[in-house]
Length: 131
Image 1 (cartoon, one colour):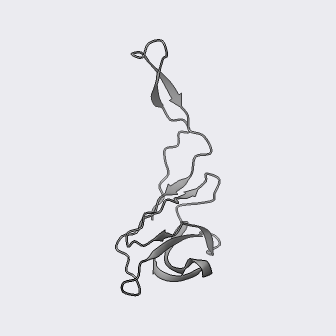
Image 2: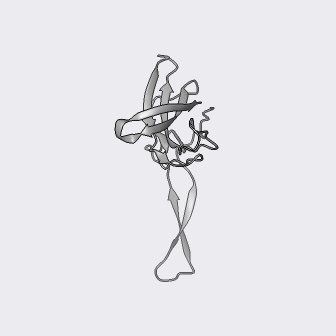
Image 3: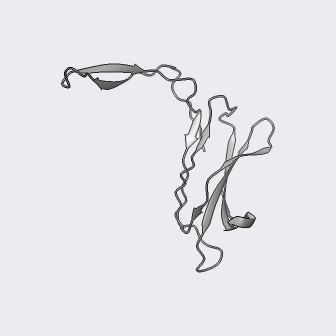
């Protein structure tokens, strides 16, 4: 995975039309500035064609996100997705966001581990695949 920096400018020149109450045909434009709270890195997750360890068993998939920082070289659990039940092609609603203050660099490695949750009541999981 490669992390690319966005432009160095902190201000974007995006313009959105704002309708005026007196005349709907006229438009005003409003400038939007980039706020310092914008995420540094953000992505969504989906899997395709996962294989169940036992035939005729529906998968209940969860993805765990871990980070390996370049200096410490230690694995830190960052977050995980929700469990998506009964499909080989899960699309997760829970995205992954690294806020602007999070220490992430080009050398930082992000590890995604896909699990099949066997029994939610006992938190029993089986490692389906690793990325």
